[in-house]
Amino acid sequence: MGHIVINNLNKEFVERRQIQRNKSGAAHFDQTIPVLDDINLEFQPGEMVCVLGPSGCGKSTLMRIIAGFDRPSSGQVLQDGKELTSPSPDNIFVYQHNGLLPWMTVWQNIELGVRHTEDLTQKEETIQEYIDMVELEGFENHYPHQLSGGMQRRAELARALVVNPEMLIMDEPFSGLDFLTHMKMREEVVNMHLFLGKTILMVTHNIDDALIMGDRVVILGDRPARVKLDRKLDFPHPRDPKTAPELQELREEIFFMLGVSYAV
Amino acid sequence: MKFKNPALVYAAFAFLISLLVWELTARFSGWSAQVFPGPGPVLISLIELTANGTLIKHSVASLFRVTAGFYLAMVLGIPLGMLLGRNTPLRLLGNPLIHFLRPISPLAWIPLSMLWFGIGDLPAVFLIFLSSFFPLLVATTIAVRSINPIYFQVATNFNFSRFETFSKIMVPATIPSIVTALRLSITIAWLVVVAAEMIAVQSGLGYLILDSRNALRMDYVMVGMVVIGVIGLLLDYIMQQLMKIESTAWGTLGSK
Image (cartoon, rainbow over all chains, first blue to last red; front, side, top):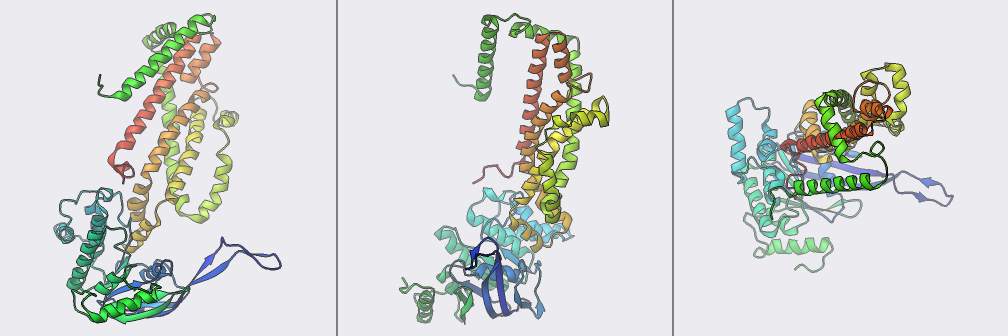
């Protein structure tokens, strides 16, 4: 399903390069730097969770731990009651950029998700279905570098969805896109989420993205990162912070929390 | 005037100029034709050696040795490089040794290789192997190490088997750098074969040059040099064509 519980999660990095001399002159080569400090969160199945926070606060580290690419220093992540320890096709990670394999065409990249399907016609139909879904008909045989940034993200989204995962983990999926593509992709992801109902974790810098898309907004802050806000957003789609006073209030609160005192 | 292939025109022009300089130097340097033959006598000797089959025989002998040694280096160097690139303990174990052996010129191995492999093709093949093995090994190791870690994460995320990680990630990701390394090391191999043939064998272009020097036929020496240059040019051209194959060129094809 995609019910996620994060219990007392801590993460420390060992910094080897930094050499600090104490008074006696001895060098300390290993220094542990706490990144995540006692994170406790719970996500319901099918929830769209938007994680906000300043750059370098540990959002991506948290996502990598949930995806199983990295292990916590202490604490645990439970998925449907079982501890999550390694990457699996149940939780597909969608990268900021370069997530597609550049030596494979769009078709071949998407095929990776269904490469064990034995029925060839069914496999082809599935791939085509997802290519149509992200509106990449006609680009099946293009290599990633022949596509625009937005098309690359859509192809990667198709590759993630074709696996039929329980959860999608997206690390700033809209960064670097032009304004219009950003708006369109946002709409597509919201529609896709309403339609497929998968658990989605999305890291973003964009407060409006979080307010418009999220069923839940989580704000991480400080160093090491703690949960500063964890709020359910029970508003119907489509949303517009400008007309919903409650959202507008929350928007200003979040801006303030992230260090901008005047929300434009 | 417009030419279909301006690069060829420039190349022809450069060769024409150097031919002219060669001719003029030969004519006005004061050296006799025995010491410094001009293009004319060399061309006549070239035709003569081609006609009696000497040149073909020696070229084939040299090419055979290069091919054998180079293939051996490829077959051993590239897989070993893949292994070292992926396996940190093995790399830490192997790298010091590799970087210790690498700067030793293949020519320094001549005495030992003659002692070990005797007279004939083997010592030459061994020297060629040494000359291209280390560049290929090091280039492959570096190529594997510089694969974007995201691709390995994708591999674990999509539950790739070890073989799939190798065939779908490591091989295609490293092919562009490996092809470049092949192009560079075939030139080194070709350099070394000539030197190797000056000691241990009775055939090959290196032997032709040495033998002609002993007979004081500088025109034959120059024919040998010209043929070595031409074949080197051809080998490089073949390698360049290899780089243009679509699957090897993903890294450069209209990259943004």
